[in-house]
Image 1 (cartoon, rainbow over the protein chains, first blue to last red):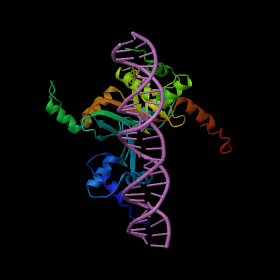
Image 2: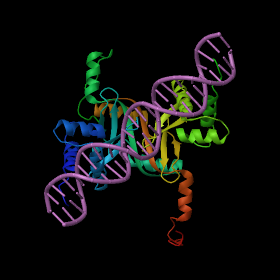
Image 3: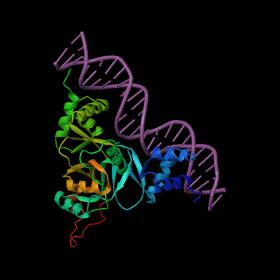
Image 4: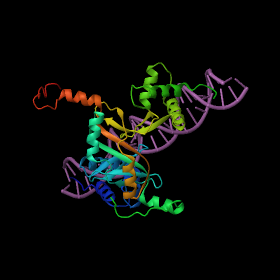
Length: 146
Length: 146
DNA sequence: CTAAGTGCAAATCATTTGCAACCAG
DNA sequence: CTGGTTGCAAATGATTTGCACTTAG
Protein backbone atom coordinates (compact mmCIF):
# COMPACT_ATOMS: atom_id res chain seq x y z
CA UNK A 1 0.00 0.00 0.00
CA UNK A 2 1.21 3.39 -0.87
CA UNK A 3 -0.94 5.24 1.60
CA UNK A 4 -3.17 4.53 4.53
CA UNK A 5 -6.62 4.83 3.06
CA UNK A 6 -8.06 7.64 5.18
CA UNK A 7 -11.49 7.49 3.64
CA UNK A 8 -11.88 3.75 3.81
CA UNK A 9 -10.78 3.85 7.43
CA UNK A 10 -13.23 6.62 8.22
CA UNK A 11 -16.06 4.70 6.58
CA UNK A 12 -15.21 1.53 8.43
CA UNK A 13 -15.26 3.36 11.72
CA UNK A 14 -18.46 5.13 10.91
CA UNK A 15 -20.27 1.90 10.05
CA UNK A 16 -18.82 0.20 13.09
CA UNK A 17 -20.32 2.81 15.39
CA UNK A 18 -23.94 2.69 16.37
CA UNK A 19 -25.15 6.07 15.34
CA UNK A 20 -26.97 4.31 12.52
CA UNK A 21 -27.17 0.78 11.27
CA UNK A 22 -26.92 1.64 7.60
CA UNK A 23 -25.72 4.72 5.77
CA UNK A 24 -26.33 6.09 2.32
CA UNK A 25 -23.42 7.56 0.41
CA UNK A 26 -24.77 11.00 1.14
CA UNK A 27 -25.05 10.31 4.83
CA UNK A 28 -21.49 9.04 4.89
CA UNK A 29 -20.29 12.07 3.01
CA UNK A 30 -22.17 14.46 5.27
CA UNK A 31 -20.95 12.78 8.39
CA UNK A 32 -17.33 12.78 7.31
CA UNK A 33 -17.46 16.35 6.11
CA UNK A 34 -19.14 17.48 9.31
CA UNK A 35 -16.41 15.65 11.16
CA UNK A 36 -13.84 17.74 9.36
CA UNK A 37 -12.74 15.25 6.72
CA UNK A 38 -12.36 16.79 3.31
CA UNK A 39 -13.80 14.36 0.82
CA UNK A 40 -16.43 13.83 -1.83
CA UNK A 41 -18.74 11.21 -3.29
CA UNK A 42 -16.26 9.65 -5.64
CA UNK A 43 -13.73 8.98 -2.91
CA UNK A 44 -16.37 7.52 -0.66
CA UNK A 45 -17.84 5.57 -3.52
CA UNK A 46 -14.55 4.02 -4.46
CA UNK A 47 -13.48 3.34 -0.92
CA UNK A 48 -16.83 1.63 -0.35
CA UNK A 49 -16.36 -0.54 -3.40
CA UNK A 50 -13.04 -1.67 -2.06
CA UNK A 51 -14.44 -2.36 1.37
CA UNK A 52 -17.20 -4.41 -0.19
CA UNK A 53 -14.68 -6.37 -2.23
CA UNK A 54 -12.72 -6.96 0.97
CA UNK A 55 -15.87 -8.17 2.64
CA UNK A 56 -15.69 -5.50 5.32
CA UNK A 57 -19.02 -3.89 4.51
CA UNK A 58 -22.15 -4.73 2.56
CA UNK A 59 -24.31 -2.80 0.16
CA UNK A 60 -28.07 -2.73 0.46
CA UNK A 61 -30.68 -0.94 -1.54
CA UNK A 62 -33.56 1.08 -0.24
CA UNK A 63 -37.03 0.92 -1.74
CA UNK A 64 -36.47 4.29 -3.35
CA UNK A 65 -33.48 2.92 -5.19
CA UNK A 66 -30.73 4.57 -3.19
CA UNK A 67 -27.93 2.38 -1.96
CA UNK A 68 -26.80 2.16 1.60
CA UNK A 69 -24.00 0.45 3.40
CA UNK A 70 -23.72 -1.53 6.58
CA UNK A 71 -20.91 -3.18 8.43
CA UNK A 72 -20.47 -6.80 7.36
CA UNK A 73 -22.02 -9.14 9.89
CA UNK A 74 -23.94 -12.37 10.19
CA UNK A 75 -27.05 -12.42 8.02
CA UNK A 76 -29.95 -10.47 9.38
CA UNK A 77 -32.95 -8.71 7.98
CA UNK A 78 -33.98 -5.07 8.18
CA UNK A 79 -36.85 -2.88 9.12
CA UNK A 80 -37.15 0.40 7.33
CA UNK A 81 -38.78 2.86 9.68
CA UNK A 82 -41.42 4.92 7.95
CA UNK A 83 -41.06 7.55 10.63
CA UNK A 84 -37.35 8.24 11.07
CA UNK A 85 -36.42 6.63 7.75
CA UNK A 86 -33.67 4.55 9.35
CA UNK A 87 -32.88 0.98 8.62
CA UNK A 88 -32.62 -1.15 11.72
CA UNK A 89 -31.31 -4.68 11.95
CA UNK A 90 -33.70 -7.47 12.78
CA UNK A 91 -32.71 -11.07 13.42
CA UNK A 92 -33.35 -13.18 10.35
CA UNK A 93 -37.02 -13.73 9.84
CA UNK A 94 -36.98 -16.78 7.62
CA UNK A 95 -35.79 -20.08 9.07
CA UNK A 96 -33.62 -22.17 6.80
CA UNK A 97 -36.21 -24.91 6.86
CA UNK A 98 -38.74 -22.53 5.37
CA UNK A 99 -36.38 -21.71 2.54
CA UNK A 100 -35.83 -25.35 1.79
CA UNK A 101 -39.57 -25.90 1.76
CA UNK A 102 -40.05 -23.02 -0.66
CA UNK A 103 -37.37 -24.38 -2.96
CA UNK A 104 -39.19 -27.67 -3.14
CA UNK A 105 -42.64 -26.20 -3.45
CA UNK A 106 -41.85 -23.51 -5.98
CA UNK A 107 -39.22 -25.42 -7.88
CA UNK A 108 -36.60 -22.74 -7.42
CA UNK A 109 -33.11 -22.59 -6.00
CA UNK A 110 -32.48 -19.98 -3.36
CA UNK A 111 -28.96 -18.76 -2.86
CA UNK A 112 -29.75 -15.83 -0.65
CA UNK A 113 -32.63 -13.68 0.42
CA UNK A 114 -33.35 -10.25 1.71
CA UNK A 115 -36.27 -9.21 3.80
CA UNK A 116 -37.30 -5.65 4.40
CA UNK A 117 -40.00 -5.02 6.94
CA UNK A 118 -41.68 -1.67 6.67
CA UNK A 119 -43.00 -0.04 9.79
CA UNK A 120 -41.86 1.60 12.98
CA UNK A 121 -38.53 1.04 14.68
CA UNK A 122 -38.55 0.57 18.47
CA UNK A 123 -37.87 4.24 19.13
CA UNK A 124 -40.51 5.59 16.79
CA UNK A 125 -42.99 3.01 17.91
CA UNK A 126 -42.67 4.19 21.48
CA UNK A 127 -42.90 7.79 20.39
CA UNK A 128 -46.02 7.01 18.38
CA UNK A 129 -47.65 5.30 21.30
CA UNK A 130 -46.96 8.27 23.52
CA UNK A 131 -48.49 10.61 21.01
CA UNK A 132 -51.47 8.41 20.50
CA UNK A 133 -51.96 5.80 23.22
CA UNK A 134 -53.64 2.61 22.16
CA UNK A 135 -57.27 2.28 23.06
CA UNK A 136 -56.44 -1.06 24.50
CA UNK A 137 -53.82 -1.27 27.20
CA UNK A 138 -50.57 -1.16 25.30
CA UNK A 139 -48.45 -4.20 25.68
CA UNK A 140 -45.30 -4.02 27.67
CA UNK A 141 -42.27 -5.25 25.89
CA UNK A 142 -40.68 -7.81 28.07
CA UNK A 143 -37.86 -10.26 27.64
CA UNK A 144 -38.24 -12.66 24.77
CA UNK A 145 -41.21 -14.67 25.80
CA UNK A 146 -40.65 -17.16 23.06
CA UNK B 1 -61.74 12.15 -18.63
CA UNK B 2 -60.94 13.96 -21.77
CA UNK B 3 -59.38 11.05 -23.54
CA UNK B 4 -59.03 7.34 -23.21
CA UNK B 5 -55.56 6.88 -21.77
CA UNK B 6 -53.96 4.73 -24.45
CA UNK B 7 -50.67 4.32 -22.63
CA UNK B 8 -52.19 3.46 -19.30
CA UNK B 9 -54.41 0.92 -21.00
CA UNK B 10 -51.49 -0.58 -22.85
CA UNK B 11 -49.49 -0.85 -19.62
CA UNK B 12 -52.35 -2.47 -17.78
CA UNK B 13 -52.74 -5.06 -20.50
CA UNK B 14 -49.05 -5.72 -20.63
CA UNK B 15 -48.79 -6.32 -16.92
CA UNK B 16 -51.92 -8.45 -16.97
CA UNK B 17 -50.39 -10.81 -19.50
CA UNK B 18 -47.96 -13.46 -18.46
CA UNK B 19 -45.02 -12.71 -20.63
CA UNK B 20 -43.30 -11.45 -17.50
CA UNK B 21 -44.30 -10.96 -13.93
CA UNK B 22 -42.68 -7.57 -13.52
CA UNK B 23 -41.49 -5.00 -16.00
CA UNK B 24 -39.02 -2.16 -15.80
CA UNK B 25 -39.91 1.14 -17.45
CA UNK B 26 -37.52 0.30 -20.23
CA UNK B 27 -39.04 -3.12 -20.79
CA UNK B 28 -42.48 -1.56 -20.94
CA UNK B 29 -41.31 1.09 -23.37
CA UNK B 30 -39.56 -1.47 -25.57
CA UNK B 31 -42.53 -3.76 -25.58
CA UNK B 32 -44.98 -1.03 -26.48
CA UNK B 33 -42.75 0.43 -29.16
CA UNK B 34 -42.14 -3.00 -30.65
CA UNK B 35 -45.88 -3.46 -30.63
CA UNK B 36 -46.25 -0.35 -32.73
CA UNK B 37 -47.26 2.13 -30.04
CA UNK B 38 -45.53 5.44 -30.34
CA UNK B 39 -44.55 6.49 -26.85
CA UNK B 40 -41.68 7.40 -24.58
CA UNK B 41 -40.48 7.13 -21.00
CA UNK B 42 -42.28 10.17 -19.70
CA UNK B 43 -45.66 9.01 -20.92
CA UNK B 44 -45.12 5.57 -19.49
CA UNK B 45 -43.75 7.02 -16.32
CA UNK B 46 -46.75 9.26 -15.78
CA UNK B 47 -49.27 6.64 -16.78
CA UNK B 48 -47.62 4.28 -14.29
CA UNK B 49 -47.85 6.83 -11.54
CA UNK B 50 -51.52 7.18 -12.17
CA UNK B 51 -52.08 3.45 -12.26
CA UNK B 52 -50.22 3.13 -8.97
CA UNK B 53 -52.36 5.85 -7.44
CA UNK B 54 -55.44 4.01 -8.70
CA UNK B 55 -54.15 0.84 -7.12
CA UNK B 56 -54.08 -0.99 -10.43
CA UNK B 57 -50.36 -1.74 -10.39
CA UNK B 58 -47.52 -1.75 -7.90
CA UNK B 59 -44.00 -0.50 -8.02
CA UNK B 60 -41.09 -2.62 -6.85
CA UNK B 61 -37.41 -1.94 -6.79
CA UNK B 62 -34.68 -4.23 -7.94
CA UNK B 63 -31.45 -4.64 -6.03
CA UNK B 64 -29.65 -2.56 -8.61
CA UNK B 65 -31.96 0.34 -7.89
CA UNK B 66 -34.13 0.15 -11.00
CA UNK B 67 -37.85 0.23 -10.52
CA UNK B 68 -40.22 -2.29 -11.93
CA UNK B 69 -43.94 -2.69 -12.06
CA UNK B 70 -46.32 -5.55 -11.53
CA UNK B 71 -50.04 -5.96 -11.70
CA UNK B 72 -51.68 -5.31 -8.35
CA UNK B 73 -52.58 -8.58 -6.68
CA UNK B 74 -52.71 -10.29 -3.32
CA UNK B 75 -49.47 -9.96 -1.42
CA UNK B 76 -46.73 -12.29 -2.53
CA UNK B 77 -42.99 -12.32 -2.50
CA UNK B 78 -40.49 -12.48 -5.33
CA UNK B 79 -37.53 -14.40 -6.52
CA UNK B 80 -35.03 -12.56 -8.64
CA UNK B 81 -33.45 -15.05 -10.98
CA UNK B 82 -29.71 -14.56 -11.21
CA UNK B 83 -29.73 -16.34 -14.53
CA UNK B 84 -32.52 -14.81 -16.64
CA UNK B 85 -32.80 -11.72 -14.44
CA UNK B 86 -36.56 -12.03 -14.19
CA UNK B 87 -38.62 -11.49 -11.13
CA UNK B 88 -41.02 -14.31 -10.45
CA UNK B 89 -43.84 -14.35 -7.95
CA UNK B 90 -43.59 -16.65 -4.96
CA UNK B 91 -46.37 -17.23 -2.44
CA UNK B 92 -45.73 -15.20 0.68
CA UNK B 93 -42.90 -16.64 2.66
CA UNK B 94 -43.60 -15.15 6.07
CA UNK B 95 -46.68 -16.29 7.96
CA UNK B 96 -48.64 -13.60 9.74
CA UNK B 97 -47.93 -15.24 13.04
CA UNK B 98 -44.22 -14.86 12.44
CA UNK B 99 -44.65 -11.15 11.84
CA UNK B 100 -46.58 -10.73 15.03
CA UNK B 101 -43.90 -12.60 16.89
CA UNK B 102 -41.23 -10.34 15.44
CA UNK B 103 -43.16 -7.25 16.41
CA UNK B 104 -43.27 -8.43 19.98
CA UNK B 105 -39.72 -9.65 20.12
CA UNK B 106 -38.10 -6.69 18.38
CA UNK B 107 -40.43 -4.02 19.70
CA UNK B 108 -41.34 -2.80 16.25
CA UNK B 109 -44.55 -2.31 14.32
CA UNK B 110 -44.72 -3.94 10.93
CA UNK B 111 -47.11 -2.50 8.40
CA UNK B 112 -45.84 -4.39 5.41
CA UNK B 113 -42.90 -6.40 4.26
CA UNK B 114 -41.13 -7.38 1.12
CA UNK B 115 -39.07 -10.44 0.58
CA UNK B 116 -36.75 -10.95 -2.32
CA UNK B 117 -35.26 -14.36 -2.76
CA UNK B 118 -32.19 -14.49 -4.96
CA UNK B 119 -31.54 -17.61 -6.97
CA UNK B 120 -32.85 -19.57 -9.91
CA UNK B 121 -36.39 -19.48 -11.20
CA UNK B 122 -38.05 -22.80 -12.11
CA UNK B 123 -37.07 -22.53 -15.76
CA UNK B 124 -33.45 -21.66 -15.18
CA UNK B 125 -33.14 -24.20 -12.42
CA UNK B 126 -34.20 -26.94 -14.78
CA UNK B 127 -31.87 -25.65 -17.44
CA UNK B 128 -29.04 -25.59 -14.93
CA UNK B 129 -29.71 -29.13 -13.88
CA UNK B 130 -29.65 -30.29 -17.47
CA UNK B 131 -26.34 -28.63 -18.00
CA UNK B 132 -24.97 -30.14 -14.85
CA UNK B 133 -27.02 -33.04 -13.45
CA UNK B 134 -26.81 -33.50 -9.73
CA UNK B 135 -26.78 -37.29 -9.96
CA UNK B 136 -23.29 -38.46 -9.26
CA UNK B 137 -23.17 -41.11 -11.94
CA UNK B 138 -24.06 -38.89 -14.84
CA UNK B 139 -21.11 -36.67 -14.40
CA UNK B 140 -20.25 -35.78 -17.94
CA UNK B 141 -19.09 -33.12 -20.31
CA UNK B 142 -17.78 -30.47 -18.05
CA UNK B 143 -15.63 -27.80 -19.52
CA UNK B 144 -15.87 -28.40 -23.25
CA UNK B 145 -18.48 -25.77 -23.97
CA UNK B 146 -17.14 -22.30 -23.45
C1' DC C 1 -64.18 24.23 -27.00
C1' DT C 2 -61.14 22.38 -22.82
C1' DA C 3 -58.54 19.74 -20.27
C1' DA C 4 -56.55 15.20 -19.65
C1' DG C 5 -53.09 12.66 -21.96
C1' DT C 6 -49.00 12.59 -24.59
C1' DG C 7 -44.21 13.35 -26.68
C1' DC C 8 -39.95 15.82 -26.89
C1' DA C 9 -36.43 18.12 -24.68
C1' DA C 10 -34.27 19.49 -20.73
C1' DA C 11 -33.56 19.00 -15.67
C1' DT C 12 -32.63 16.04 -11.63
C1' DC C 13 -30.62 12.58 -8.71
C1' DA C 14 -27.65 9.32 -7.46
C1' DT C 15 -24.07 7.37 -8.75
C1' DT C 16 -19.85 6.25 -11.67
C1' DT C 17 -15.72 7.38 -14.40
C1' DG C 18 -11.60 10.19 -16.29
C1' DC C 19 -7.75 12.28 -14.85
C1' DA C 20 -4.17 14.85 -12.67
C1' DA C 21 -2.38 15.83 -8.12
C1' DC C 22 -0.74 13.65 -3.82
C1' DC C 23 1.90 11.32 -0.51
C1' DA C 24 3.04 7.24 2.70
C1' DG C 25 6.05 3.59 2.13
C1' DC D 1 10.37 7.40 -6.59
C1' DT D 2 5.66 4.94 -7.20
C1' DG D 3 1.43 3.22 -7.20
C1' DG D 4 -2.57 3.25 -4.42
C1' DT D 5 -5.62 7.25 -2.93
C1' DT D 6 -8.03 11.15 -3.42
C1' DG D 7 -10.75 15.38 -5.18
C1' DC D 8 -12.70 17.84 -8.91
C1' DA D 9 -15.14 17.77 -12.98
C1' DA D 10 -17.57 15.61 -16.34
C1' DA D 11 -20.19 11.43 -17.89
C1' DT D 12 -23.86 8.07 -17.04
C1' DG D 13 -28.31 5.90 -16.37
C1' DA D 14 -32.68 6.14 -14.73
C1' DT D 15 -36.03 8.70 -13.75
C1' DT D 16 -38.77 13.15 -13.41
C1' DT D 17 -40.37 17.72 -14.93
C1' DG D 18 -41.56 21.78 -18.17
C1' DC D 19 -44.18 22.82 -21.84
C1' DA D 20 -46.58 22.93 -26.04
C1' DC D 21 -49.60 20.16 -28.74
C1' DT D 22 -53.40 16.94 -29.62
C1' DT D 23 -57.79 15.09 -29.44
C1' DA D 24 -61.62 12.57 -27.17
C1' DG D 25 -65.63 13.94 -24.95
